[in-house]
Image 1 (cartoon, rainbow, N blue to C red):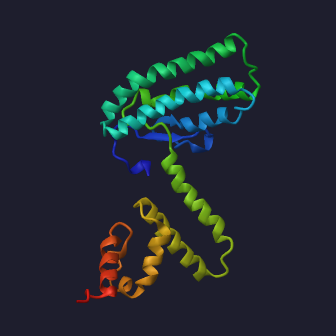
Image 2 (image 1 turned 135 degrees about the horizontal axis):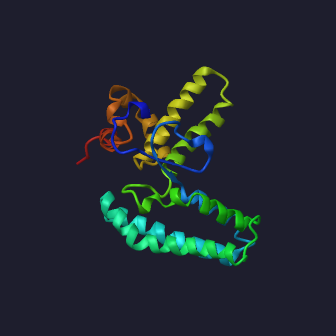
Image 3 (image 1 turned 120 degrees about the vertical axis):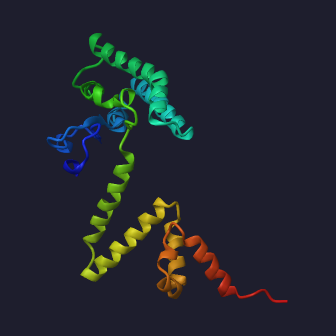
Length: 229
């Protein structure tokens, strides 16, 4: 809750451009999700293949630079400098290209491509916050992936016949998502819990997705017994 946040630098508010995503009266630094703007171009690629190819190629370079910063574990300040050196020229070239399309009347403003350009121009400052503020993200994909889990589960919950069935479904969804976050294959994880249900009941903490490998190895060793002579 933003009203409980200590007064420091304003937090970065990342979302698409929908007016429903505004944080109210709390001061924030607004950033818009680049993939949302990119999607507008992807939707018209069949009608404007060359133009869309230029946009996608430009944005691909920006995301490659961001991936490089992650691989090198750069600090927010170092990441900012890298983007200013490599991504800023790309984004400026993209902005100049968009301006040229309308100035030379190469694109009809009400066409699909024209609307994609207008959207990006309108939200340009938010889309390029990562070139000015350390730590500003390029997208909110992590948050969207988390929200999709809840939305998928909400749809599945329409088919539960009892409250207990819904409760069990909630538990399984929690376990599945927690396993995924810890890079554990959910199906095999759930199977291991069922196969060793008695041991799981004795020590739940040992069988959590982030540390169940040791408990599973020990349980399997005990089930096979000592080696025979």
